[in-house]
Image 1 (cartoon, helix red, strand yellow):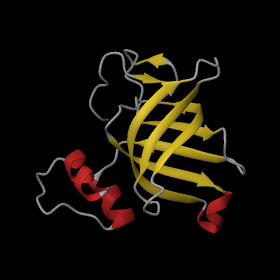
Image 2: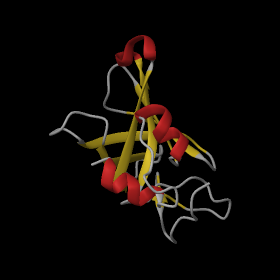
Image 3: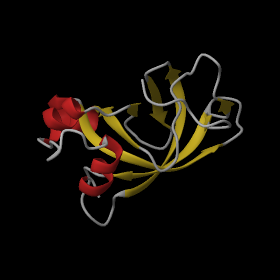
Image 4: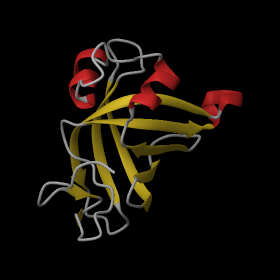
Length: 141
């Protein structure tokens, strides 16, 4: 599990709880799986994402606006803003449905690991002691 969320960090309008549910923090990198029919037989697409902003929409249904940098997307269109409805939030991930995509697109967001970067993007650190967030900031932009 990642570091404890900063006091007052918000996901879907809820303050981080003592149970330490997974909480998205602006300016951090995450592993994301985008799931939907648009990805054909693969069903999913993997991408490092950097959360740039989170705004609860106050609808009472767990909706939020997520602004993020989508690293595994063509240059020039990597800054994204998705209106999401949180489907499930646990200690290691958040699963959300894009309200604006047809057909439906789901986003599974969790902490990245070196293994995840190697498996999906053949990225590995030059220095094994390098901080993962620093590496992603340099390599995933």
